[in-house]
Length: 272
Image (cartoon, rainbow, N blue to C red; front, side, top):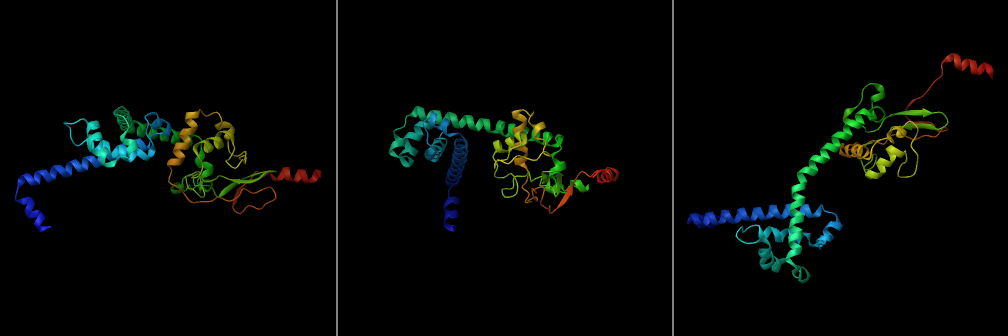
């Protein structure tokens, strides 16, 4: 290490050369990383349109990055004359410059669209939060709500209080967070939309009438998927709610039920 320091200190030009080399190397790494990420995010059919296989993404990313270090040369020329010889397979070497230009254009477009995509996703999540708040989802799906002390640290993590529906049983508001084992983590966006707008779970079971899916069926497609985006953005909460329990089963947690007044109960008994 001492020898290297002494060698560099002997000539300022050597220091400048090493600094420039390191700067170019870092720039190439950044360009390669951005290109690889942008291409990896594209659907397969779009990649096929420019004649690119996913297995070739690393080659294209590294090759385009190698051409970015010399502004006096055309990046594609640099690609074909240097990096391609070192990295590419014979099949890739036979690709035309036109194809590489299309890939470069696709990458630039994807990188340019990334900030807008992030902004659009954030707006969708905010819209979903507004709809979930307006829809009162917190009431039936957050622990502690029916005791007057909602546990917001476990927001929408599932209720410990069930609803009794005569003749059907007792149903508890399930965990709506993206926990994979006790929540919606393994549900697709389409499955969640089907549940909240059609009352049907992925396993085919119909949701209890307590869930107001008949009202949510009026949601627009955009609003329904905005709710999904918000639910998937929540921190996962591990909490498996009890039930559901059939009409002849005994619930294991608190239950809300409709109880007739004493006079009505007495009158019914007298009639019998």
